[in-house]
Image (cartoon, rainbow, N blue to C red; front, side, top):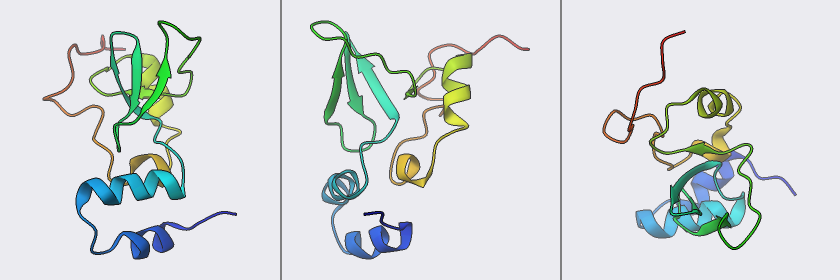
Length: 104
């Protein structure tokens, strides 16, 4: 079953932000916009852990890591859909980017 953006927006109307983010992830999937800390990857939208590269074998091939400005994240960002971006943080916001990617 697929759900449209309009249907998701209708279902989250009136919810507080944290609940709305969790509902979006439940209705669609976790965002490919992710955070990373000490080998653990979390959904950038609802903050649920989605991967573990320390004790597990998680390889975030399609992830866009918040705070990265690398070529891989920029390429992966081009493939994001509304299911990834709705109520998710801007992964390239100036206040989160640790380093700028080298100019092409």
